[in-house]
Image 1 (cartoon, protein in one colour):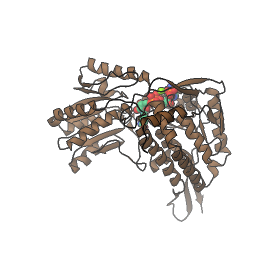
Image 2: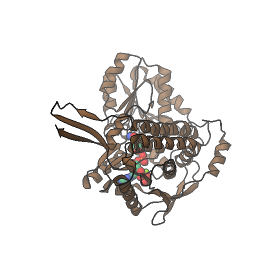
Image 3: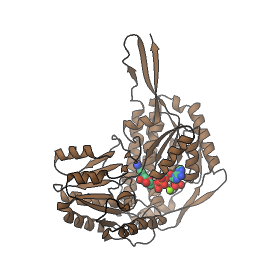
Image 4: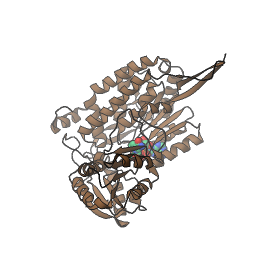
Length: 492
Ligand code: NAP
Ligand code: MG
């Protein structure tokens, strides 16, 4: 990130011009019923802007536009190499507006500016560039049918894709869906999270400027239970790509079941275990465990929220993790030196508190309780002696709250790790390369991070086992979500 002081970012925030309209069918326009809502920043609880708050009729218009753009428009019919050029231009515009977009995310949901700039926006750029480049590089297949036939197996875009996303990595998680959908010729209706609506509209404005045709990317902010549901139930939407909670994911399966059986792709919650074995590189394991639960103020689907530590080293690790967590104090997200920001909304503090109070009531011990900030500012909590059956060990908190459990051997560690309805990710710390592979094979999780956490690259798939979802974002595997396979069988 370029050298910039807090005062520079504050000045930039004051100059910021927020989008004031929806983006439907290539046009900026107010919601059909004219409603707006306040956009409030968790930084200090003040109003940033008015959000054009869409209603059901706006979704109807957006789906109709996306349908038309898919059925009749140029986008799905363009050569993939032409879509690539447009999407690369889109990425250039995102890069040119990186400061503004990073600032919007930070103000909307409180992520520290340094992280918005270097982590969130880096991932967004990587995503658009990766799928732009992939658009004209995937080959189709000819099946080995023998001499008497020719069978072509080709990919076609699935059609109109509904994209519904959360607020914790708002631009990244949206880009993981929108980029491959657009690259492979689909059209999109995006309903961003209530807390992060305007950065999403701004992205779509840049897409339009880059030459993405009207109707191909439509963005309508508004209430999930109204707009998301409308998209989920819509007979003209062919596929739905959702990231959010497991409870809402379940609703989307119901919407699909009760409408047109649209393909429903879900990236859901997690309660990820992080196993530290006695031979681990102790200092790094401890520092990463603390960083992991405070990163993004704990609001990570992949947060390493269950620390499972071998009892031989349990005291030392717990002491270290408590000390390291105590070093994270939530600060002003506009300060480039801040490493932990506030929660994404003031109301979230009470929700996180409920989890912590219940954990203590269920017998957990407060190894660290650094709550007690004002507003959305919420310090880390470390709970030790957390029973496997307790709610803290089973439920996602989405805040900086760590549950520590002890295991007497590797088998118990694996059993505890897998004792969850979730299966999004897991961490494993050991220097024994055989143990790495043996244990990693036993962990029921979409990603196993070994001697690291939250590392990644656009080239690796991301998604969950069990109730953490289905399908995969990122990598070539994401193509599956946005394409249909067609067999054309020719008897010679
Ligand atoms: P959420 O409450 O499930 O909301 C996600 C999206 O769904 C929002 O746009 C929301 O709209 C919409 N929605 C809410 N209720 C709905 C309903 N009844 N019908 C249709 N749509 C509805 O999740 P969140 O609080 O924004 O985000 C936190 C959750 O996301 C956590 O569970 C986290 O684990 C998960 N997550 C998963 C991943 C992953 O990749 N696996 C990544 C990040 C986050 P509103 O904004 O109006 O509520
Ligand atoms: Mg919500």
